[in-house]
Amino acid sequence: MRTGRPRSFCTDTVLDRALTVFWRHGYEGASIAELTAAMGINTPSLYAAFGSKEGLFRAVLERYDAKRKSFMDRVLAGTSAKSVARLFLEGVAEFACDTKGRDPPGCFSVQSGLSCTDQDIPNALAKYRAHKERLLRERFERARNEGDLPKGADPLALARYLMAVANGMCVQASAGSSTRELLATAKLALAAWPDADEPESKRRTARSRATAARA
Image (cartoon, rainbow, N blue to C red; front, side, top):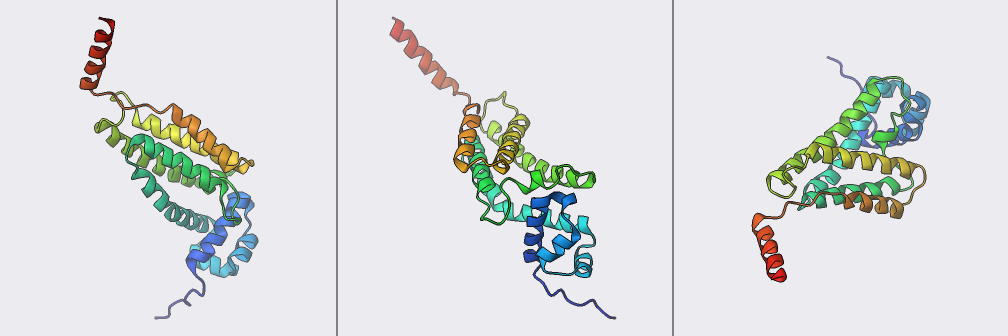
């Protein structure tokens, strides 16, 4: 049985190069010629390895997700719900601007599918963002159960709040905002974060002190 020729390229390398093209031009704006030129492979090799332009894009998105996993792991390991929120927004502020001079500022998952008529692509990007939202929601559910968030806090609303702020920060980065400016935005967003409910014993002590002060 004959087998195909082994690939003569590093998959991670060509995916990173394709990511830059998709990020700069968007899914529809990135041509096969631009992709293959950046990746250093010919068109038959692209189709043999990834099946189609959409297949390549999905492989790029998986690669991007894998590269961002360590960031989310660090965020979710925060010692409190507020520290999770702070690590997330401050991390977004930093990576959205510091692209090492290769990729555009902003976020690949936000910008690469804008103005795309192929709904499968925006759907794939929305699924990627929804996964991060779910991870945040689950972390905040745990925080609420542990008393680190008020009993009336809505973990889903908090996760969506962070995602909305982060996506807006990425758009601002693409328009030229600096890391310092985005960190200021993150600080304002965190000012609205709900504090944990005070233990009843602490509230009783505070009431007793107030009563004694008035006596």
